Length: 308
Image 1 (tube, rainbow, N blue to C red):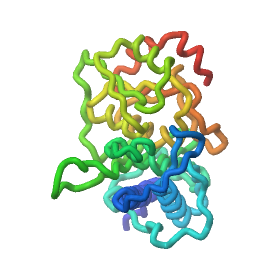
Image 2: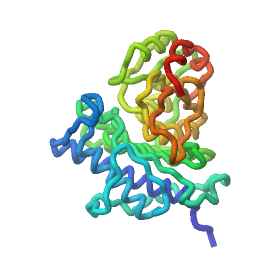
Image 3: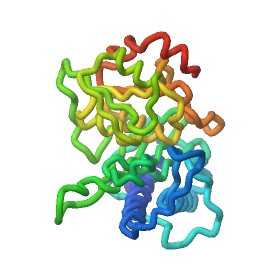
């Protein structure tokens, strides 16, 4: 008799289905036309009806199935009276066909921390830049990002009638990442992806010092990691505080599962245990390959300005 899937595989399989439902909710809010926009701390820090609905859907759906998880989301955690039509009880069974990496086979629920960004790229969402938008569910164990799920609600939205709208990418350390075609920027080309809506002199000075052939400014940390793994950029550089743990946990796991690397600007690994501060105060540096090429060229003045 076959053994039942380990906790991690079941959690990722459930997170996949939950993220897929979240993508549908994001599309439904957009098509209804009323985004319900509020400013949290200013015009560059927005929240929409989709942020609120998806937070409720993801956190409540996962908490019902896995009641001993620690779940940390960007928005306030939902109360117990969540509408039943927001709950997703399914799981993506294709994930359960994979063997759990041995190092994670005996994890307990209470040892896991799930980091949720219900709508990464909210500003872009409100401006109609729909291909920038992602839903992020990251899973951490012993402070390390070990698994992640990224849903792109509007993937293929410009492909015309008949195109399948939306996709979900997932990955687990020691197993790999799935749902996309891995591609690298050709050797010798240095393309940096960075923030579209949170730029600053420090960000621009850092990028200029790296002397890239091209700069791709897009919204969302999830979207920037997709730029790396699909060969549209060779480095993701954000020399500024502002990015949070829920922005980086899922993308980091997916990138690391295919051999990439994501750190702060100083080269320090991020920690994702439940007591950690939420802000990534020393910025982000990520690559699929050739990490040292970029890490060694970060100016000392930039590093001095960003305290871990």
